[in-house]
Amino acid sequence: MIEHDVIAQATPMPILVAPQAVLRQKTRLVRPEDMDGLRTIIPRMFAAMYQAPGIGLAAPQVGLGMRFAIVDVSDKDGPRNPIVLINPEVIAETDSMAAREEGCLSLPNQYAEVVRPEAVRVRYQDMEGKVQELEADDLLATCLQHEIDHLEGILFVDHLSTLKRNMIMRRLAKEQRQKH
Ligand SMILES: [Zn+2]
Image (cartoon, rainbow, N blue to C red; front, side, top):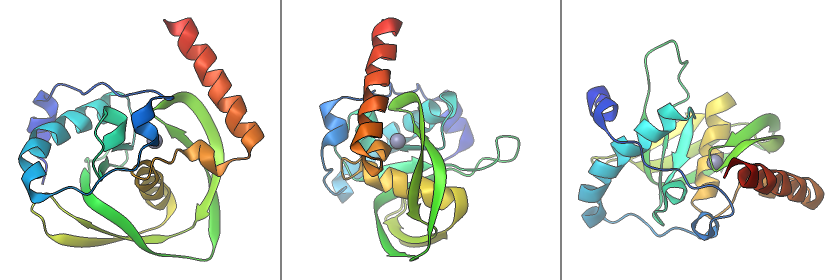
């Protein structure tokens, strides 16, 4: 479990914006000896995600080539529900697909409708190393698939046509140039 006051006191980690090479690399599995470091980093990732604000953040987005991500799709007016997914994988998915508008903290201000399996079952380890399974539909299903994609070096724009993807990446690059 992640304590809320630990997140509140953590310094947000900087979030990398595409095209950063690390966002395109497949991550390696988290090992037990990584966990000490992750206990410091994960609250800082939550702090960055809540500040953005966003509903998911994967390790490559903060420059780490390790297979873990965090999500919280709770209503912003209700209690938070932070979930840490260590070495997550989709172990089942529905044949039925659903389209949902997606964005990404590494592609700020860019949104597009992405078609994915409507519901998924994800297996992962929690912070204590215990194997967990999570069945998700709706927003959480989209979010989990989006984050697990990140761990393979895949961005949501990769699910779009080349034309649409190039358009978004050009627009992002232009906006980033104007910002700096
Ligand atoms: Zn993302």
